[in-house]
Image (cartoon, rainbow, N blue to C red):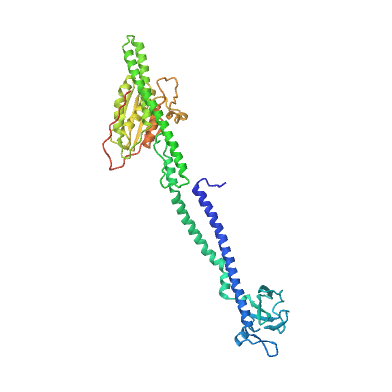
Length: 465
């Protein structure tokens, strides 16, 4: 099994292995071919020398063989020159002529045939390349032996063969490395559509079910997989849409009977029982509104040019939540005087801060104050004086329908989940810390709007309680 988990890694690894094999096999193959070609050239040269010597053979008037070499060839085959040697033998092996001692062949006679034979032999420290070539003169076949000292073979051919590996190998290696670099660029360009699809796939989630993997420029063998994934995403988006529509429709349908029920309860003469029922109805109304918000913010997307002033958002939330806080004997203080522009939707941020403040009002003791602050770095802090949030629960509280206190029937565990979803759509974050003395601090971090592109704040969307 390949140790690489990516297609690119596997392709590169396999190609590197192929290049290494080519770097080893190619020089050896070329060396074998060059050496074989050089040997063929030497054999041809020896045959031509044998034929040249045979061209000077003739029979005398007495029927004896005569070899009349010109002076240039006598010098070439002389013992003093000691580079080439020749011998002329009859078919029975008798030596007619020899450049060595008279009557002595250059090498032991080989079995006769119709084709030249070649061989190598060592004499002292020298190595000789031999050829025995049959030549036909008249009706008789003679054998011409040619011998050449390999130390004196053709210098150009010898140098090519002897220096091929150390020289040619260093030429082939950079070429193969350059080929590897070109292949890496090719692989990168070929796999670029897959990398783009992977980057896009990482953005797909419950909040972005509308995204699809691109089919343009996708490799043909990967295209069926991409289409299957897109088809699965279509079904997933349809399921999410049906679920959101059901939740929103159900919540809207509950509003009317709750309003009727509230009107009937308010008409009761028994005020103590009526007040308890009205409190329960108010809690149910908040849950219905949170369900509607959950369905709405699941589809929330923030445009690249949307901006909001979090100071104005915090001020609007404080004004909106003040009656609820006073009715419960709590106070609200806001520190947001300087406009602070962030990338985001003012209406969605209003809902997020409102849910944080509502959560703080529910947990801070009577007679205390919930503080809201907007900082110039895009931070919003909501603090209370309640029991705080245990460290082991600080990640759980942002999950849907999670409640730390199951005895609070009016809470569905959706408020903080809505906050987390809104901040996710804004690319922001939220952190829970202990207050300076007691209580909890919810710290929201948002991205500041680009400087020089500040517009008017979007009006905050104020939902009904």
